[in-house]
Length: 477
Length: 60
Image 1 (cartoon, one colour):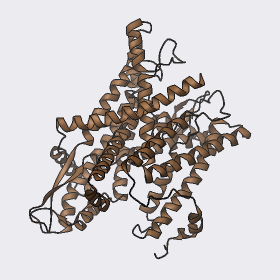
Image 2 (tube, one colour):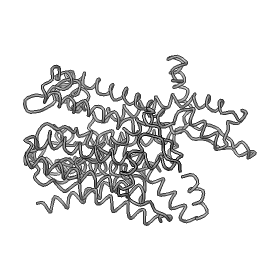
Image 3 (cartoon, chains in turn yellow, red):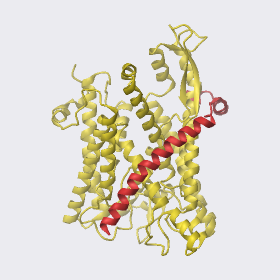
């Protein structure tokens, strides 16, 4: 293994000494994988219930993390895992952009380079966890900079490291990756809790938190008026939210199963006709996560600029005296009040600009990030053609020529990149306007994650029953 | 980017053609995927729901 020339190799001594979850040497059985995945899932849920010690009673109004951001980052407010997968996702994005932008040259085929890449990413995640833990504690929970600030920062840091450790455990010994498991777990719990929680709400007397118990309760006892359980003021879930959740779920499942089949044959094998199914939802969920992360940063910088009293800070984010965001770019980029609330309370025209800017911005940024992501991760026509060419495939009726394949793929890949990015941006934002439980983005991410998890478990079980097939899967993994 | 090199209108027409060419899931296939992902979300969500209910009861 030749030494990597990248200037990052100065980090090698540190990387070598870092503890790591060991890669399984032997084949991990289906039950073992299931065991580790479930253990980490339950640990994640238990940890999200553990409130931080010395957490201030009255949580400050100024929420740096929006609810949408919390959903995407699998974070539970006030708990030890306040940071959720924030640092891991941010670290991953930064590394991907550095490599994509050719700032650091990493040659994936060289194992030494790969060790360097993963080691650097690990160091970056630890630094980001430290930074985010301190920033949140300093600016959100304990601005008075006393012992409490340090105690809270420490707990958030420990929580962040635990999440990162579990992510390694699941990614190496379980199914799928820890990051996607935590997102899906957080959203699924939120959907179930907002739909079925029997507990009373603090804010609204007489109402239950869960939309369905509240609705049934008013049907039976008639105490809270029916109309109030269908369109519930404030942030609590209502029946329209439940319907929106189902509608979004159906649309996402339908789109996820759409395919464009490109006829292909194996050059050498006579008559072996195959179809290369391009997924219509070609762009994964990363663009939506990038978009939400970008909007979140606008809000964070607006807050910091406001704190520092920089001129024109109001343009970025305007906060009223109680700390609510009331204006500026950040306001328009955060999820607006529910559309049907505005219609019901007649404030629709007043909120219209907010609706349009929010949906428009989500769609356009999803498209931009979708395009960027397809290029960076080599999903564009040129690279896919190379991969298929290397696998010996060709388009029937044409000579085995990579340019031909690239041209034909080039006819389909850009359109589905654009359309799927726009679709994802639209679903994510529009669903938020209708109060979909777990947010539109959350449902979008979770549906994709759960289905891929199922596919992986099914193929694992299949290869368990027919060891011969395992060799094929080993080769393709 | 190749998509835009052939002009906006042409590209939009190509988008439309691609959309028409996409194989929509059959009813049976759609139900299968919906059942799987729906069950997955409910099961995982239920575990989280129970952990929260238990923790609410413990903390009174």
